[in-house]
Each structure stands twice: as C-alpha cells, then as structure tokens.
Length: 248
Image (tube, rainbow, N blue to C red; front, side):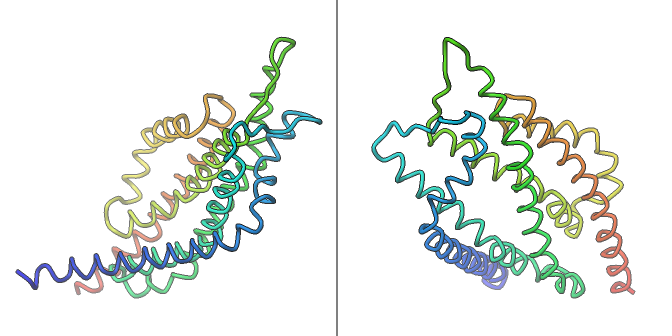
C-alpha cells in the first residue's frame, strides 16, 4: 500500500516544488517592478485617459487607492516578468509523462507560450482597449460627464489584459490535451460548432457588456482553436506512431 502511495506523494512533492519556484520568481519580479509601478500604471491606463479626452484624469476616491493600485501594478508586472519561469516549471512538471522527443521541446514550448501570452495581451491593449473605452466615453452628454476612478479602470484593464493573454494560450492547451490522449484532431474538428459557441459565451463572461471587446476576443479565439486542431493533428499523430513503434 505504501508503494502505491509513493508515486502520488512524489508527484505532490514535485508539484509543491514547482509552485514554490514559480512564487519565488513572481516575488522577485514584483520587487523589480515596484520601482516602475507608476510608469506601468500610466502605460496600462493610457487608452482610458485618451478616450476621456484632453484635460481629463482618473480619480482616486479613497486614501489608500493610489498605493494599493500601484501595488497591484507591481504584482501584475511581476507575473509578466516571471512568465518564462512559470511555463518552464509547468513543462518540467508534465515532462516525465511525455515521450523523449516531446520532452526536448521545452525551449520551443516556453518561447511559444510566452509569445502567445504577450501577443494576446498586446493585441487587446492596442486594438481593443481604445475602442472599448471610446465606446463607454461616448455616452457623455450635457447631463453627465465621465469621471472614472483609477481602481475601476485598472481592474477592468487588468482583467481584459489577462483574459486576452490566457485566451491566446488555447493552442498550447489543446497540445497538452492531445499528447495526453484526451482529445484528437478529428474529434476537435467535429466539435468546432460547439467550440465556437463556448468561445463566444466565454468572451461574454470575460469582457464588459459591449460587443466590441466580446467580438475582438472571440474571433481570435476561434482562429486559435483551429490552430489547436492542427497542433492536435501533428502531435497526436506523432504520438500515436511512437506508441505503435514502442508496442512492436
């Protein structure tokens, strides 16, 4: 019985070690980013401030709002800085269950995963945020003028920043499902209509109630899902062939 429990205990110990290393990298990233938290905040809220127009700034309505918002900026920036370490530790944890030729893909995995997250976040920041904030500010009238708080703007920006970054990791997620044998390319292809529906539902939940951000998040996710089908075809097929050779 102890022998049966040993592998589980080892896996849990390995998982704890990987999580600890991720947290250490994140903490170091936060410490580094704290000195630039004001600049990071200014960069993140630039689309909102531009949408409000010249002469408008964000409001801080609580004594601690500025400090804690800058602290959250450092936490967010620290996470982005630590992303390569995060992906490296994820791969190192799942690598023992992969074939030798798949384990050697750690550097491409870390690079592709980091670029996909960065690409999604940059796409949202440059293409979606200006349109979204312009949409919300367009409701100003002679009776009401927008006076957004820094906490609300930062919270919305951060949520969408992470949503776009994580959404662009869809091909990587499909890769893991395919190498684990949970799904294959034909199944994913047949499930495309359901995937499209799920993508638009997820986009509606992750974004504010405006069609601009929903569509701009959902459409790339659908394209990335189809990329994931191709990934499943390539890696799922190679894994099946490797399994056949090992059986022989």
